Image 1 (tube, rainbow, N blue to C red):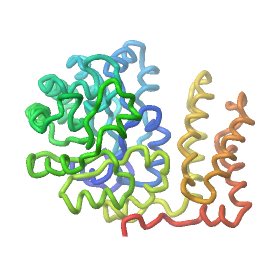
Image 2: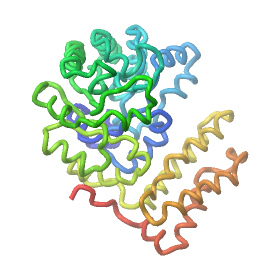
Image 3: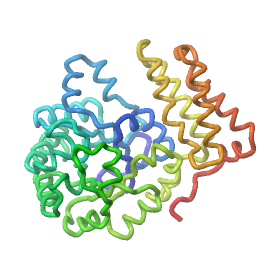
Image 4: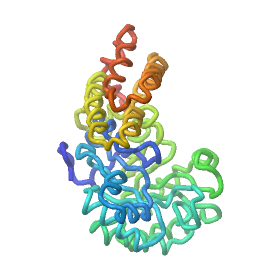
Length: 366
């Protein structure tokens, strides 16, 4: 399902993706990212298979709140967490058959201590990884994809990673995203992004070891130039950018050219923010009265980094925060576009702001 794009099927279109990040890659961020890039593959926040089962029992409204997204967001991948094959199969079926996600990914890489069999802890049990991937394949009626690490705790040998990948392949998996670090359970998620050393070489070696797998590298990839290098120099299928894309979303504005050889979608920040304002107003209008304030705040959150690494970054963030604070309690009466208008007026009052608003996407890969 490739709404509004001329892209090939997902399996041939993963040169760049944005990592799933809880409290970050919600539908509002994904809509912003899609305004910046037609082709980058977007992942939703990780969702528990049990949460989908509970929401299904509670009714369509609960499911919609958890899983719905705009058609413009395609291609978008649902990432599932859990350890029960039956729940995983049902969750995958709902994600694809009812909501139209383009793929379903198993989370076997999150180091959070959420029980003995979640995220990276699954890598201690390769057979269970295979069972869960097979369950996703049955429910989604397409091969599952897998996101994992190089290892976890003492299970960090090349042979153990091979066992995990072999089990996944036996379950039909043909695309694996590998975070180029091991996970250390009990260490918080932030430290798990820095304490275990990056080992890009270990991920690159998988290209020759597993010629029938599409391998995407994740971890420490912060620029389009670095992403392009991994593909061109080492034959990787794709590269995944994480928090840098959320903190500095404008880097995605050059992704279509740099990563896919296609014309860029965005022409300026001014254009993107104008389109996002229309979207944000609609998101609030469509929300139930009880949720309008929460949606109002969530819809404005992703744009705070739109001027990161520019002389206007501080002024932009401050203007957004001050205006949101001023309108607190009046979210149902004041559309998000009104907040944007005030913040944009602050930028347009300076020559630097006007320049950054009208600037074309950076040439990130030249």
